[in-house]
Length: 225
Image (cartoon, rainbow, N blue to C red; front, side, top):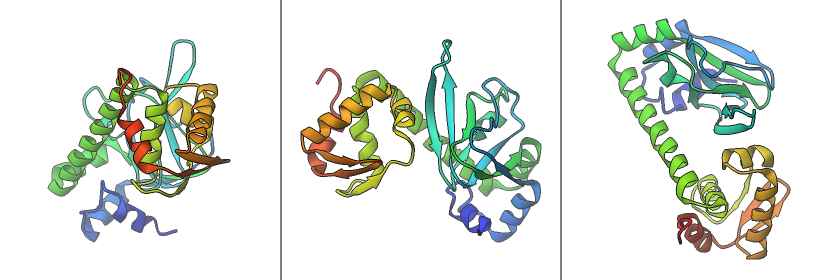
């Protein structure tokens, strides 16, 4: 596997020269992590951040009663925990691989030193963090103003990149339920209702969008609507 190509296609590092990538790789370490291995805990001191090279990782919070709420699923080329190396320097959530994964670890001190020397890396990081903040704002908006059918519709549209097509859920239905801020039973009922309304068809983890326009209308609908 060409990890360097994955890095070059990552939005976080896409504008870097080969020389810059060489400097980045010199301070980094590639690690293999097993499914379910805890990468860091909520409130733990941040020692660096990660890039997914192969596999996928979930970032999640735990409620007081131990219920899991998935915040993000990170796929190859994606970064996570980068914001934690600034400010208080604490990881704001938990993270663990959903399958055996290869991760690039960038230590805090080495990376901050690289930022001081390379303005392009700093610009890319600002853009990446801005995208993260927009995604987080959308999550809050969905949880506040949209019901489960609308949240699911928006998720499927984003997964399909805005086209009528068949997509495969990248995570289990229980994990998707957590990501949408609901429970598995409610998600199953919602999938069944959208199928009965001929908006989608479901076969295992494959979901076919049958009526994109109506699904988009549902995605835009608020609880009050």
